[in-house]
Length: 149
Length: 149
Image (tube, rainbow over all chains, first blue to last red; front, side, top):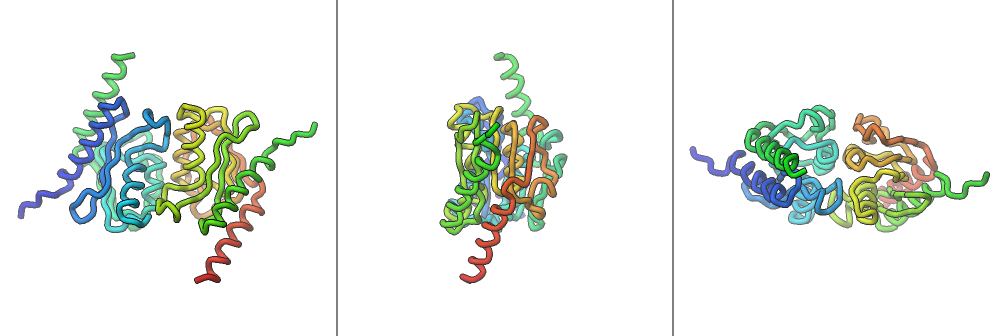
């Protein structure tokens, strides 16, 4: 059976968000939150524009999804995020009790797996979806930035 | 030498924020951020009112302080918070590179010490300032809530 709305489909939506961040000069990370094959929230990194270390893509998507749902718990929701979440974002996902987190590229230095941040026991995790695209975008950002300085 | 603006003085300011949260029916946690003996940002837990798991006292204080300073890094800043920060808030403090975190009561279950969340290497930590007052306020909140249900 053809399943058009698969993990790759939604990760592409998260990558589109990451590209918007790139265009704004932000470290290109994007996230979407999905319920029943529908995107209910989007977010991209805005830490530079907002001068705010808490303005990661995931944090904004969590706030937007809760606002859409009218409740703070994200049960039955899946987050697609282009880069493995950090301690802060994994900590927020813990409180949200989200059903599933799908990430693209690993962050071996500051990602929640290396940092041993706990997600909620109910949260499933899957990694590596469109990891290459997500990683390439990040690399392109840092190369461009280095050449500008 | 008498030092009127000591840790107890600023923790009382954080406790005032926690009391505001209590009055709003929120789990009573409060935080302030201080530079050169001046409070530059305040925050209290608003997770219920905002329907948002990210609306912890610390997160709001971090955002407010960065807004006040016009920069996202909180170097030379001290956060006073009535309860030991969770993974999410400690993760945000990590990114902020804040100079010092002073907390009141320990959170043995979900606090960053038990959860092994990393703060920035430059961040000093001190605990137990007005811990009893902070803990009493939390206990009073949960007793009141239980009696209402």
